[in-house]
Structures are given as structure tokens and as C-alpha cells.
Amino acid sequence: MKKVLTGNYAAAEAAALAGVQVASIYPITPATQIGERLSEMSAEGSFGGRLIRVESEHSAMASLLGAASAGARTFTATSSQGLAYMHEMLHWVSGARLPVVMVDVNRALAAPWNLWSDQSDSLSQRDTGWLQFYCASSQEVLDTVLMAFKISEKTFLPSMVVLDGFTLSHTYEPVDVPDEKAVREFLPPWRPESRLDTGAPAAFGSLAGAKDYIRLRRRMAYDMEQALSVIDDVAKEFERLFGRRYEPLAPYRAWDADTVLVIAGAAAGAAEAAVDELRRDGHRAGSLRLRVFRPFPADALRRMLHGGMRLAVVDRSFSQGSEGTFSQEIKAALYSSSPKPVTTGFVAGLGGGDITVDLLKEIWAEAHNGTVNPAETVWMEDAR
Amino acid sequence: MPRLEPPQRLPRIISSPGSTTFNRTSSWRNLVPRIDLALCTGCLLCWKFCPEACVGLPGPKPEIGMDYCKGCGVCAQECPAECISMDQEAEA
Image 1 (cartoon, rainbow over the protein chains, first blue to last red):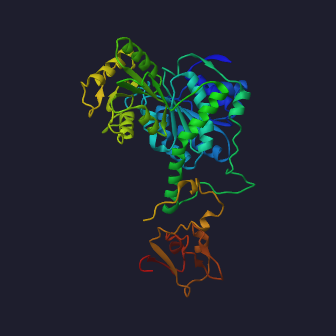
Image 2: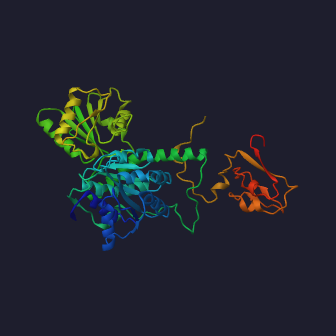
Image 3: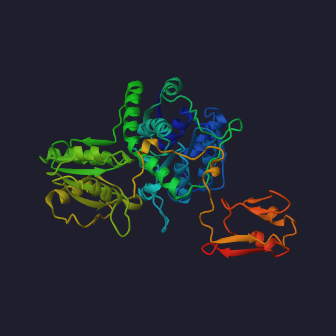
């Protein structure tokens, strides 16, 4: 059934459709309407899971650690400071190998208070062992949440589904909401072999010495690597059932491009519009949307980009003392390529700045004309 | 040093009951408790207070299990007969 939904409402619909049994929410700034909508759906009876209102984001994640350990399908949503406050529990959940799915609405971190769209919150959690998916439409939010449960339950790794604050979280779009029966076929109930069960006692969260600890971390690294093929399998099955296909990297007019804009999130739409305008003016422009960030699709990236290309990586985050997160990761992935594409990092749109078509055309031209030093990050003025 | 075995054979979590029967947790002990059994009155306060429950009672007098003792010294502190001393691990 077609519905008109914001990114937030699409996330709540997806959680209900996925048959989430326990959702924990902490409804305070900077939370989003996802918890609010789940609460309404719970009151109406359209969300059948147990909704727990806790006293902090840290507790929200901690309660899901418990619920998932008992074998429940679990969900939460947060944003910005809330995600930062959860940081410790993110490691606990991934280390305990629990398939919790969380939606993070990308919003800037304080100080100063800002809370508009910015990717620093989720990207500063990149080393927590969570899969990360960056969405570009409300439809993709709904579809990715459904796929994330399946991917997480197969890989025993939690997933963070990320969407842009306001530009996607609060924008109404038509969304094809699949019926529950079809979703149940795609995503049957989760029945983990190993769970808290008084009938079959087991000990979770026990102490491990160095000998065991490194083995557990190695296994996690292996499962994270394998997640790329799981993501691919799940995307194929999703396409077969629902007709929509998602790839880790979404290129747009990129195969014959000489300079490619690389970007994640909803601003990729503006990048595609900029590419169309540049192509109309006779330029060989292309763009590439980074959809899966953890595990990082380095092989696919190397196959897609070649040495003759120039890349303009647009970062809505910045690692102080280094460079934008996507820029670092892309440069690292391409280090072994020979010849390497000339890659320049551009920081733009921090704290809610608009990533406009004109701004992206300017970034593209700077990278294309080589007027910038690729060794230095280029900071762009807010477009407004 | 040898490399880790192939990762697909490694465990994801440790959850088998009784995992501390093979995962001995005394590796960071610096001080070792020693009981002077000649002075011990068998009051069992060390047995009662040991936070790791590693004081056993094979007979009327206690014996400390070194697989799990972390050398915290609670037993020595509580012993009214002052018959438990804490020695350096290296000298033990």
C-alpha cells in the first residue's frame, strides 16, 4: 500500500512490520518522531511489540542488550547526543553479537547546540562493530530497516540505519509499504540457538582473558567481512519479493566520468542533479553514493573507480586533526590501486548547511580543474 | 608467534555453562594469601567473606583455591586470628 511518510514515520512503520518484539525509546531532544510514532502505533494496536520508555539512551541500548540476549527482535532510534551517550553500550551489543537494529537520524553534535543535519554523530561510532547504512529516501529507510534485521540476524552483528536529519527525517514522500504477510516471508521470526533460557542455562557476558578475547574479535572481523556477501544476498532476495534493488555503492553516470562526486545520504540527489547539469554543459561528470559504510565496500569501490579519475569526496563530518571521515576511508581503500584516482576531500554542510546543486557543481569544478591541493581538506562556505 | 586459526572456526561468544572451569581468572594476582594453620581457629570468616568464593573447606580448616584467587586480601583483613599473610606472588 502506498503511504505518504516522512523518513521518521517510514522507520517506525518498518519496525512494526519487522515484527519487533521489544523497542526501547528515550523521548527527549535530540530524539526524533520515531519513538513518538511507535508509541502512537502501540496505543492504536498497530505495533504489537513491547515498548519500553527508559531513562536515557544508554539505558535504551542496555535494555535491548538484555531483550536480545533473551532472543527478542529489538529496535531503537536515536540521534546526535543520544547516540554519543549510547557509545559504551554499542560496543557491548556488538561484542555480545546481538542483532539489534537502530535508526540514527544524523544530527550535529554540541557544543555549540545546533542539532541540524550532519553526519558526525554516526561516523564517530564507526569503530563500534555496527553495520552502517546511509539512506537517501523514505522508501529506502523502510526497506533498509527490513533488510537490516535479516542481515544482522545472519551475521550476528547489529545494524545502524542512518538518515539525514530534517532533509529526510521530516520530508514527506510517497512510500510503498509492503504487506505484513510478504514481510514475514522475507523476515521470519528470529529464533537464536543461544539465548537466555531458564530451561537451558548458559552464561553470557563472562570474563575472557587475552587468549579468548583476540579470538572473539577475530571472529567478529571475519563476520564483518562476510557481511558484504550477506548484504548482497539479502538485497537480491528483497528485490525478488519487493522489486527494489539496493547496492552498497550507487553510481550515477560514473562509468565514463573523469571527475566523480562521492557523497552519502539524501544529498546524493543534489549530486545527481549537479551531474545532469554538468553533463548538459558537455562535462564528463559522475557521482557515487556511498550506501554501506560498515563493512566498507572497498573492493566494489576499487572496481568502480580507476586511476584516470578525479574524486571529490563530500564530507558532512570532520575528524579533528585528520580529515573528513569518508575522505580518509576512500583514500585508504584506494591506496593499493595503481594508478590511484586523485582524491580531494571537501567539508560542506556541517551543522545543517544546505548541500545545493550549485555548491556541488563548484566542488566538482574545483576537483576537476585541479585548483585545489588534494593533500588538504577544502572547507566550503555554507550555501545560504 | 603462531597465527590464529582460521576465523570461521573461532567462537562468536563464550556462553557455555561452567566456562570459568577452563577460563581461570587468577592471572592478575600479585599477592598470595598464606594461612598459618597452626594459628587458624577454624572460625570460617575467610570462607564467608571471600568475594570470589575460592576458600574451600576440605576439612575443619580452610584452604584457598589458587585458580580463582585474585589476591585481594579480604581474607587476611577479616581473619580475627591474623593468621593469613599476603606474600608477593614472585616470592611465593
